[in-house]
Length: 155
View 1 (cartoon, helix red, strand yellow):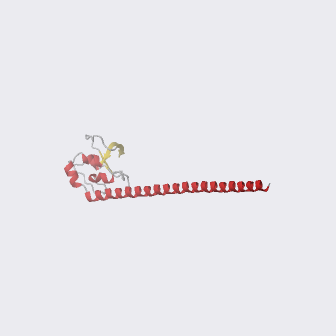
View 2 (cartoon, helix red, strand yellow):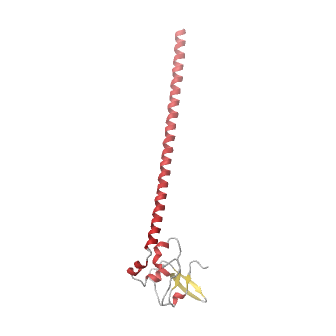
View 3 (cartoon, one colour):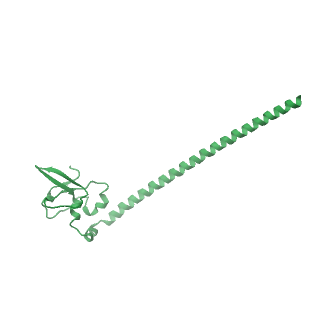
């Protein structure tokens, strides 16, 4: 298996049939997850600003290839493109992405709250430790005062 799929027939084809999962009209759904198929670019054909273009040796000839989506999108109107879209699947993808982002944001928020709670607990523990040391020091000073006071009265 060649990855991405390579269509050499597009060089001379009058009609292209897309039978795989990566349909050009659902490009927005899979473009971030898959490389997408590539098609041979006819010699007398130019695709302005292709998203990807490479040359490959096919048999004994060097041949240009572009993403099939780029080739396809040059021959279709926006209205037809819109009519072909699988909006249900696109919405599912977008909802899945949104839900994932929300889940990650909630997780980060909980982690941050836990860190703040832990930092506050550490701060309070340090304050309590300081307070106890201060109290202990004051008691020792009072004992010393009482002890020195009793020595004064003994004399």
